Length: 235
Image (cartoon, rainbow, N blue to C red; front, side, top):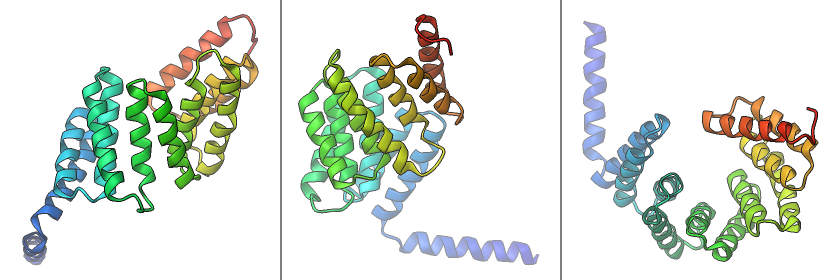
């Protein structure tokens, strides 16, 4: 009986708190939490819809805005549809215009860069990602995207690829944890492009040794097989 009574008290308190919290705040956080759950299960479309609700409830919240823009960019990349990139661009641009002096605005510059890159607007993507890194030079995600944009900006131009290498290395350095497999993988591609197979394989092994998500593991294993089959490496 005592346990039941305590449970009832907790439920009543939660109900009172929920009643007192403004609807937009309640809807915003509920939409974000639910979106996180969907995203963790791989339902990017459902997560983005939920993040949209959170963003519309609290448009000034950078976490909600960035989550919505990020998943729209993810959908644009997977579905190859500019509509999603356009939405991400609109969300990022609006937030930047309204909060240009916010210390977290770099998050929106990252998504702006991704939306521009996805629509093959390379010059504006480079400007946006440079702005993100200038604002937050120790952000791992911003550095990795900057490295990707520099590396792939002009296919075939090895000077551009070499410029990306220290950027990826800096991303690995600032991470301060073992979860650097994304940067290691992208760095491996840069080394492969400049024909340094030994370093490329070393970075791939580093990435694979950190138990990366399935999509990255498959891509890393594919690239590793390509390098080993090239005849230029014995590892």
